[in-house]
Length: 181
Ligand SMILES: Cc1cc2nc3c(=O)[nH]c(=O)nc-3n(C[C@H](O)[C@H](O)[C@H](O)COP(=O)(O)O)c2cc1C
Image (cartoon, rainbow, N blue to C red):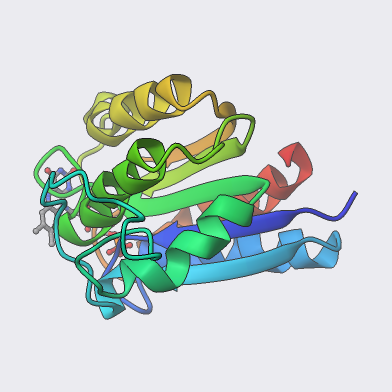
């Protein structure tokens, strides 16, 4: 069945490791007939959540109108959400964290976002899978709270520089993730 997939990326490196995995995933997902909408958070203007709880009162998801409001309708419509990110200081880069925080507007706005599929593609420099806990655990808990089904995680430690991902099976695993959606 063809599904609507929203891919939200967190890296500012266009030729970087998580983008390479993102592109492998998208290519495989589109080959399976899915529709992919990609949102590169680092190349958009998305501020943090103001916690004003006036979500949807202006007709848009967030009263603070920035690029989050351009992706919010696609997130609402999506069958699956795929987050792709490097680890920055044992956590998410600020750019993608802002998008995740702003998903709060869909919850406060009473939107039905339960039942979506969710997946995580992530990488980091240090050669220790536990470093990825900083993005894996919040992602899994966010999914659980929102009643999203985690369908896959591609977690790749030990990649620092652009191109390092090619020395791993990260892109192959990211492509295979398309089979889980
Ligand atoms: C600001 C910053 C903070 C980082 N913090 C960590 C970290 O805490 N742990 C780690 O293993 N790698 C860290 N890294 C390395 C990146 O996770 C690594 O280079 C990754 O491959 C980058 O992915 P990208 O090419 O998709 O941007 C950091 C990199 C930057 C630029």
